[in-house]
Amino acid sequence: MVTAQETTRPPITERAREHARTIPNSWLQVFDPVVERVVGAVSEAVIGRYLVDARGEITDTYVENPRYQGPGNELEGAMFLVGAGSIPLEEALLAVLGAELVLPLDPARRDRPHLVLREEPGVRVVDAFTSDRVAPADWPQHWQRRTGAELAVVFDRADERFELRLCGPAGVRLTVPGDELARALHATVL
Image 1 (tube, helix red, strand yellow):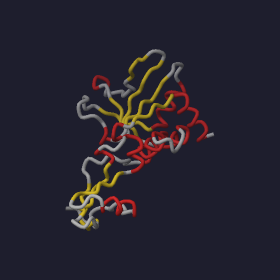
Image 2: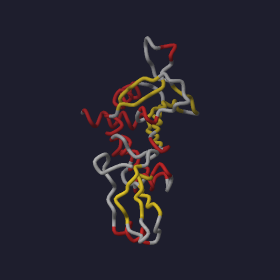
Image 3: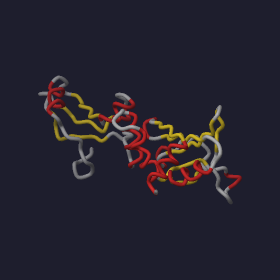
């Protein structure tokens, strides 16, 4: 059981109280509204749940959801907001530039880390993860860290087209054209 001292409980709204009255002797799940809008009403969007008593009243018993995958940093928050249609990609680019990203590393070239690229028609793709917690466990465990700003410099100097494919929690993805990231960097520093 989780107590209020151990975690911040989601607020109980009047709408939640009304719903609880219709489900006595059960649990009231509390969803993160932004995550739910992006990924749907899945377990990763449930922040936690409150016990509802026989009268349909919400009790003090609260259990945090260990599978909740809400934003853990500014970039992940921006990705959810883009996915929900709350902000345009351009507004999220500052978060991308400032973020430390987790990228695959070729273990044969550890002495001089470089970008691991995937070729797609007309574009070279750089896969990146928003944090260690979302880096896939089934990939080879060789990682490097680069900031979005570092990648913007590489993209800006290259004579080819790049895309940064960001993977975040709960399967949220964001594709950032390399030239747009480079323009955002120029706008920030000039």
